[in-house]
Image 1 (cartoon, rainbow, N blue to C red):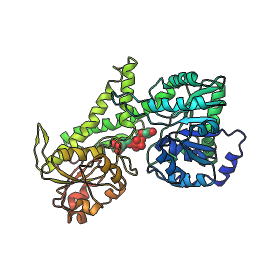
Image 2 (image 1 turned 60 degrees about the horizontal axis):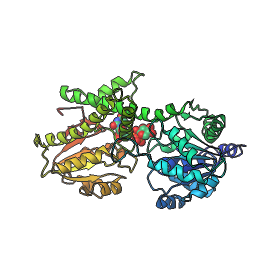
Image 3 (image 1 turned 135 degrees about the vertical axis):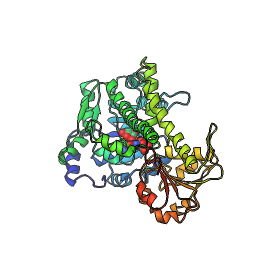
Image 4 (image 1 turned 120 degrees about the vertical axis):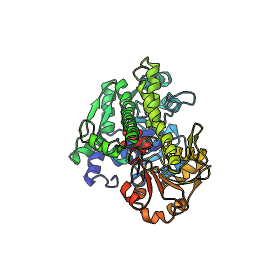
Length: 473
Ligand code: UDX
């Protein structure tokens, strides 16, 4: 893991390098915060910047404002060795950096599916007028294609006099809960710049990643390309992953109607190397801060560019995804012998325990979480819903205060008419059906992400339902 820090030699080789640009990361959320600490670990001098004082204070004290496996150690280590600092002062940023990475959020706009670039605009226009020496501004945030050219226009408009300031692009591909590894040991690096000067500086700013790979006898594929392609790689990759998930979820629907088992189907399909096993887990669908919003933003950008017809399938992908949540609530009603009338499932009087609130395991992130949304829908259908999650309780409570939250797993399931495992946390996968059976009111389990062994539960006298498997178990 990341705390499997760099080999000792790596530090001396990297820090003794002749040209080592000083790096800043603007926006120290899950993206910029992880990059800042990891690039300090790779030997760069790094300054993290954010307008959020709370975040900067936490990082500066060696604490994390969000959960990310292995990141805390790297932050503390590099604060201690002096290679990492955090600030809310943009003058400090302008003074310090040679290469400025823009890592701010690009959420969906309130009034449409397009990406909101206002944080990016604020960040660039506050930094650029302060720059007194040449600098490269590198986009890392996920953006609509065409943004790099717009950033260059902003720079040209706000640049002070004759200082050379250029834009470059290098998308990130971090997966939450694996972000430290994804930065230190990426599966590819994509770079786009417009001049030789910018390209050289961009490469120098990523050199640490390649040096570490060489020391570990690995290769990191490098794709040098144009702005449009670099901007598209990220959204296209996320749209592709979403498509894969919705595809298998559509197959889950067929399995439910025919008695097939979607987990066996996905396993069998995945042995074809052209298909592969990853991202074929059927269940209640995808969520999180990236996949859903990137899918919508790509479709919106496609429409703006006159490619709406080609991007139309993306809305089907989203519809299938949201349909999984409806399906889970209907299944819950079926299992408890309740009606699924035209007004929706009738769950009044039922005590439902939802295990899992985060959008996936090993994170405290509940953004667009299918699990939490299913819990909300069950509550709206009249059920008393009690939620338990190993890490996401605090965030969930703020987002869905009307739900009940249990202190621990045991109290969460006690007296339940139905238990739903909606986020495949490791600790839920190892639940003991017999022991749990003594606590609940009715032995009914809904396996929302197909992460349990149906036979174990059925053998212990439970009514088991997965998503697209064991329709009649
Ligand atoms: C994603 C991309 O994977 C990453 O490359 C990009 O940089 C950011 O967006 P992340 O949001 O951390 O990363 O989550 P990911 O692991 O991709 O999972 C997204 C969602 O898909 C989760 O809700 C997960 O449960 C769901 N999922 C994943 C499935 O439903 N089935 C699968 O087979 C895999």
